[in-house]
Image (cartoon, rainbow, N blue to C red):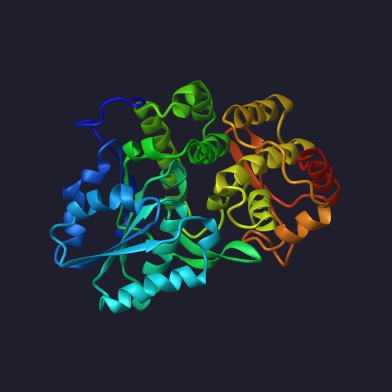
Length: 369
């Protein structure tokens, strides 16, 4: 079986350093069974496990068994998919909390991928003006990226993640054994964020991911642990320096300005988030080269790894005007003018505006799908 035995494997413990809002990230096969970490957070409190129709049947029972010290445990099961990341589904979480008489001392536990984590975190941020929550990510994308850093929110028809809040979790439990049940398309989508972290912050990690790619695609436990742990280290360091994206944290959006445009333009759920980011990284790489920031050899390495991972390298064939329209509704845009995370070298990112001629040339070269 890919990954081998999961029992008694050591955990990797990381920390997001944010003063009195600091929290641990525990990575490893078996992290879901860390009752010792959950118990101090949930003891004597009302707990809601927020999951979805795909993940809840697989893991909600196991998680519930770790919450024996809670005063009550309620299951909130959401429909699965990015298409449901909106106000109506969010309101379903509030309905369940109010029906169970949850108070300000209650806790939400997000069990699932990025959509579940974003929505449960947003619900926790605003329910009675803020309650605690825990992240138990079950997809590669959520484990390496969205579960860490406190960004929460929902989509709007005009833009992805445009409605939300910063709200840090109390704990992140990234159990890589859960990835054995992950469909291959979802696993590949998660690799986009893994590649992204190497591209923006650590060229040696980028090379390590390239070397580990066959093992990652085969769901090898040791390779997955290495990728999740290093990606979390990179993100935790960035978040510790810039929690609310005043500057440095924006580099985590490499590929995302183009990617979010693809997701919104196609209709949420048609492309997985990681698929859109994969194509978006190729587009941002092309733009970086056109602006004289990135040399051709590094650009070719990025495109080759995105392709080898099985991610799209060609974006939808839309007009430049359509792309600009979609990208103008982006959190990095200023007065409707998009800004891009670009690469000055492999492992070093920056945020820039792009001249219209260079942007149009990039779109003409990469929007060919």
